[in-house]
Image (cartoon, rainbow over all chains, first blue to last red):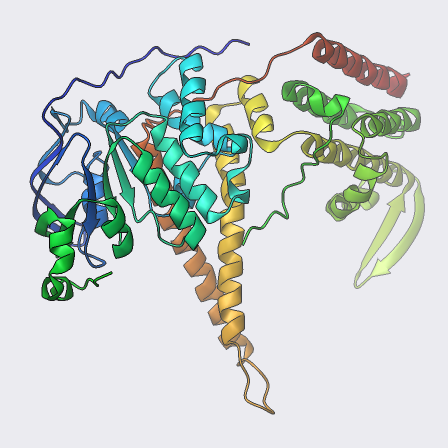
Length: 251
Length: 263
């Protein structure tokens, strides 16, 4: 039985400006809690930026806005495309969002199907889907796991598969929510090397200040729904009183 | 912690393992329907069906007692049919008194009861064999390609995937309770029955809330990767000539079974 698939619908636009431009974004949860109070943020092509701040600062909420899962008041632009209801599918193919808990991210029975989920839903032809899955699994060095069942893997393995599930969509921007949480030192080291080698613009939320110091030249600090600092990592990590004021620790 | 107690797949390299999952699913369903259609007391046909089952067992390299051993667990469910012993009119075999009622077992009732028992026992064994020789995702794919409504196959696939996550969650809750269920020396652990029931109720509520929130997060993760209400799959399955032969053979055997049962 042949399976027919749609042809490619999503061609990411050429962009020489900012990959991500968030302008004055406000958002309140239905219970009235204001999570974002006017956030503005810009990322250029190739930027690797850490997003730090205490729990409840609005980091995850901001991330859920970047591909339109939540929509607040204000502008979000990805590669020059304004996020609207109409180009939601296009935006979602350009923003690879990796959730904190890999069990939420991996919902298909096998690793292969999970990694193929994104490309399939982008309407790519079968051969293209297969080659992208291979490439994505190769990138996280998990090629031998393609037929494994996701629930039999370790947390570190699940994490890498979760990253592969968005790499297969060939996103312009990778958004990771606390990627190193709950990993043992070796899995963490593997992850750090992986993030360093990936040639993609990324925004990574984390509490792991050592990771920030090692991997990201630029850091954005959020607290109480606002960006309170956006500058060189060395500068921010050097200012101990500032770190203490926002519930952070010097590595 | 991983909880794999439900995974009944047994990895072997056998003729039956290699068959297309669609073939296995169809043959299993046809076999079960055929069992249900056999008339009461068709002993030769039942015997023939059992031989077919043994043959399938043998060809899947699981050993011919594999399904037999695992089928015992399903037998209690067949006891639901026990009422037919008394409810079918026929010649009485024996009568006994239970509380304030008289029960009469008839020969026709006994015949039907035993037939139902054998039918369900054979059917359960075939289903056990099916999940032992087919990976679950393949099975779901097979149903998809057999035009089972997408909503059903999607629900089944998610159920299977998150059964493990849910059991993990249950065990975490149980462990958390266990580790705090201490007792002072000389006194019994835990309070009264009502108190325990209340705790258990709270735990069930917790489990519901956790799974509800988790389902929300999963939905977000699906949205983030372009889900718009329809699941797509690649088709790694292709019918080979061996698959067609096996289907034809199995259907012929099942047809023969019906012929034997009716004449």
